[in-house]
Amino acid sequence: VVKDDSDLPTYTLDVKIPEKVPEEMLEIVDSLDAMKELMTDKMHEVVAYADFVAEPVVYDVKLMSSDENGNLVAVTPENFPEKGIEITVPYPNGTDKDNFIFTVCHLFTHAANGHVPCETECPTVTKGENGISFTVTGLSPISIGWIEAKSEPGKGSGGAGAGSSTSNKGNNPS
Image (tube, rainbow, N blue to C red; front, top):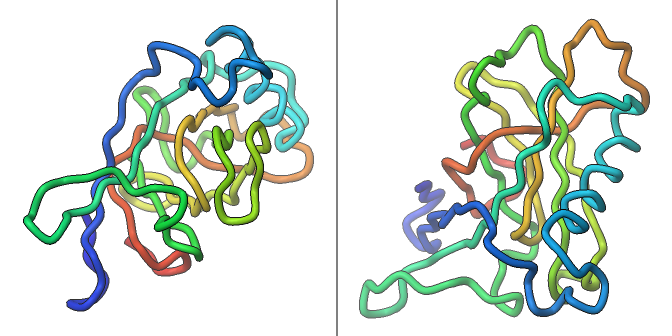
């Protein structure tokens, strides 16, 4: 949980392995495997490499905020921070800052911040001492993949990890 300023809300993440395809996407993908394949294909475009070190991991991520009574409630597309949020996640087991290139893909399940369902964003990833950071303009699902750094990536690198902290200012470090 990160609070950037006393007058801004505090956010937290609810991170799970998805159990089913989001209802809004059933006309586009009919299974979790098809959804994961769509996201993996997009990540391959970013790193231009066919084989991730491990199968990319998909997380169902929800941004939560406290209401006026202090109860945690899900942030909706209408009140999702317009500039996005920066997420910092720990390095996946068996990886580190120096020997891997990480890629993240977010698949929009509903219209948000100018995006439509089934559109993806693959944010730039920053590797830090405690994990990777990336900014997304919506949440759920998010997929993370990685390749070995010696593997000649193509267009660039993206991010990885399993949700740990967020910022409500898209370009500020956690």
